[in-house]
Amino acid sequence: MSDIARDATNTNIFKSMKDITFEQTISHQCGVTMNDSVEARAIAEFMNEDPKVTITHNPATIRIDGEGKLVFQMDEISEFLGREMTAETFEVNTSTHYGRMVRVDDNTVVLFGNMDDVLEFVE
Image (spheres, rainbow, N blue to C red):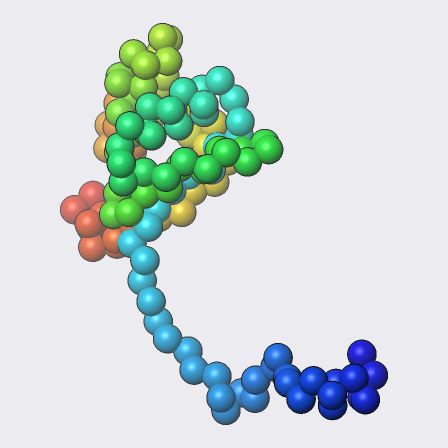
């Protein structure tokens, strides 16, 4: 953009450092991104029954987002899927996550959005 055009608009999209303020916010959100697969689609469809869960389908991935915590019960997912889903298979299908992931037992994987809630699982 020429100086003439810039002067004509009289606007500057950049701020001086003295005008920038930083605020700390905590969202308490958590979620997983899974590679799009039969298992991931079944997990997303099952988790979508919870109104506090948001499912986003991307071209090659599926995101499952929640507020506070997400609980993945392998036996319930297995019943919905029609075949066994283990915590190990769940973790393999999960390409990434945010929040604090805790494998409570062989049947339960929990994602926490609030660090204070996960403290009871820390030894």
